[in-house]
Image (cartoon, rainbow, N blue to C red; front, side):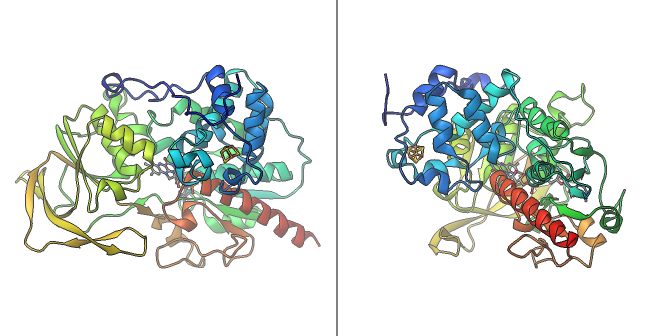
Length: 463
Ligand code: FAD
Ligand code: SF4
């Protein structure tokens, strides 16, 4: 029976008690029947508001139509046409602010579950060995892509579609950027990441791992050897509050904490040789996706009390709705309206607690959220074994210091024009390297735009 509108088809998930003991995916994903039932709710709005708000303008209506008809293969090709990694974006995009946010049914919190439908078709293709093949008319020019995160992946795939020879340089021993080392497996299973990344080699991208541009290989060498260069180096250098006690043992940046946990599999120590110190009581500073990821990892690493220390309230927290909801279900404790002033430690140099100042909310600031205002003299302390700062990050200096000729902004991001071209001809940049901390889908969109820009640049040079 066709069910237009109606309520969202509920997705089964691991129970809270079970999932806090493992790193497996929390949602189970739709099966074919559920996906069809959810897709049938779509009314195929004439102007397709969901598509307009998608940063890569996926053909969402057509994908949904094919799911309704049970043509999952066609639906997958439609998704893959504009998006190199639909199994990933389907799981991690902030859909409530994009496609799903403008769906007419979202007014009743019941927007079509576009993300999970996208993940369904991509998973279906993976499980059925269906791959997107495309004809490549090989061209002689070579392009270097620095960084294998979403920006680098989408740029490399599109460059291959144009026919260029692409070599990707990645500093780490695994490709994927934040998808690999930042977002935990219970949100984004690593076999899905590995599978989506294997597409790079399938379409003929040469991936060079353990290659740090600016250290193992110099940027100017790339400029000489390649017709154009794409910089997708992300924003992996952590930011700190700059308060007393940040050098104590037991204090981590979110990046280090997640890197150890996800990429180096510290949760399997000593089977894997990277340890992590995560005491019984842990305070996570910040309330974005990264903070939720840290806090939820800490629960799974065995912490008993995990506190989110935030200077505004839950209502203003920038984390995705789904992540916030999952975090609350997993019994993370929010301490709202506090700002850390000092990390406390013992004579052996280990964290023992934190001093916090109470805050109140004032008028909205530039972000549109109420400004947190200090309440002078309201300091109090709490005991903690571990502190993690999840305050955002910026592009790492390693690469920037090696390339002083490249113009950057005062935040350390690369300056680019409307075509993502830097001040050096033939050098294009995108993703977090130009935006600071943004999203996977924006990085993918930049990668596509950058590939087009490089293509136009090469055509101009040929004349
Ligand atoms: P990255 O993913 O950072 O990739 C950059 C790559 O470049 C890395 O692999 C790095 O090793 C490599 N590199 C850097 N310097 C060099 C060099 N000199 N030589 C060679 N290689 C180099 N976004 C969402 O949309 N949804 C989410 O739920 C979400 N959750 C997140 C959770 C966490 C913990 C974090 C940290 C971010 C999250 N984001 C999320 C943001 C999103 O992951 C990023 O915006 C996105 O990954 C940026 O892609 P990128 O390709 O620009 O950079
Ligand atoms: Fe379907 Fe919602 Fe998109 Fe309209 S906005 S076409 S109902 S998914």
